[in-house]
Image 1 (cartoon, rainbow over the protein chains, first blue to last red):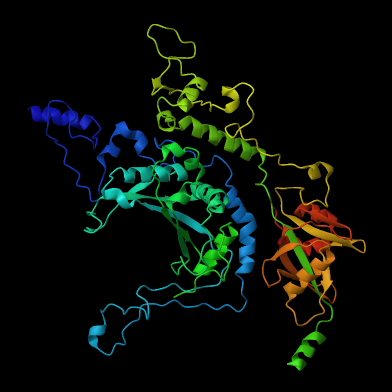
Image 2: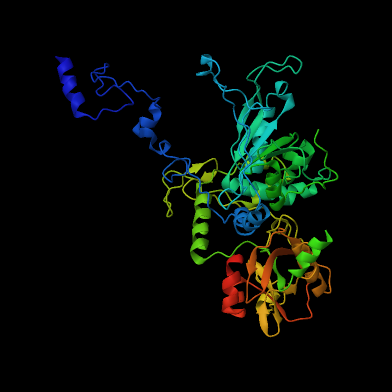
Length: 303
Length: 255
């Protein structure tokens, strides 16, 4: 009898996903459970956490943070001044598409070839992209900057990854995430999944802000820094990496202003992800954006 | 080889090169009224939503800097029961009034020590965006219109146009010759960066061909014997002949 009464009540109330309990009396859900085929975070379905449902760019979200607080000087310079020049610099009227190395299919001489996986590209392991002429649509652009700060002595000093995280947050204004060791290395006394440092990916406003700090305030003052190398540091698909030592990192204004606060700082690696098709095009872009480069005679020849 | 050279040089009749010498913007672009209001609103919103300033992190307890900071910053009005607050009941968390944005006063040398000289802790004042050349509207100056791209035009025979030279030497590349001619025109040494060895445009007035070479003036004192002007796009439109502007207008930056 009670079952019938609670069933009527259950029909009256809106069914919430967050709890099976409608009345305090009955502890068993009479409504048939919904078996979700997609993972659902129940906390977000609850009416208590309305602000968590939205994207962080939505003003209703609890994590909303205004981004367009000032004109993006760095991006304006790229769009208005650099882009027209890059278009002219990369123009070549005799340019033909250079085909990348693709996976090779089997010749079909055996019936077993039909469903066999294609062969590796010749000379390389991973297929490479075609290199096409540049137009206004595919001009090189910096897409993001990944900063990787690895604290070597984290196994002895477990607070070092936290310092690294804080360091990155101070100089980039973006929340970093921890990185973990991937494997056990006995000689370095590292175990798998030990926090070893921090990493952050910069995009948009924060990227522009960081790059202008780096090129205008930090790099010109690093005495040992003679410029990026013309031959090294690229990954052959238009992404350039370089590093700064822990002494160089002290030149960041946020660190320099509070020297007492930073008894330990770490060196870091920068990976500049660009949409350039070759490393030289990426260097052309970086040079235009104010990165210093070594003189060609100083650069090491490729091995 | 010599016959080839002779053939080319025989075709060099009526070939000219123009230099589109640009001075890139020096300061950030000008904002219109709406943009200014929009950015101001977003900035204030960001300040309002900002987390409480972690003064315990930046000012070590018991240090002189902490004392200065506490002295400069009056704490919020604390909440006491049975007290009427005309501006609403305060809501204090971690020594911050939650209902409004957090106002912080940075202790400066001036504010701490009366009669002290300026120091790096004092407020940073930006230089003015307009210069003396702007006030006088001195079109010969390179310090005019800092937020815009300026282009060099010269007055040759009563007609304003880009500096144009006759191409006579068939052995040298076009862009090299153009820069050399520009250099000869100016008594001071110029630091010119030519963007590409390709010209940006070909103008065909009557039976002649004028190749336009794009360059940037990086540094150097600039003065010419002839009458010249550094103009932004819309000024250039009113200075040169309409037909001429129609042929080069698309090469000029609107910013």
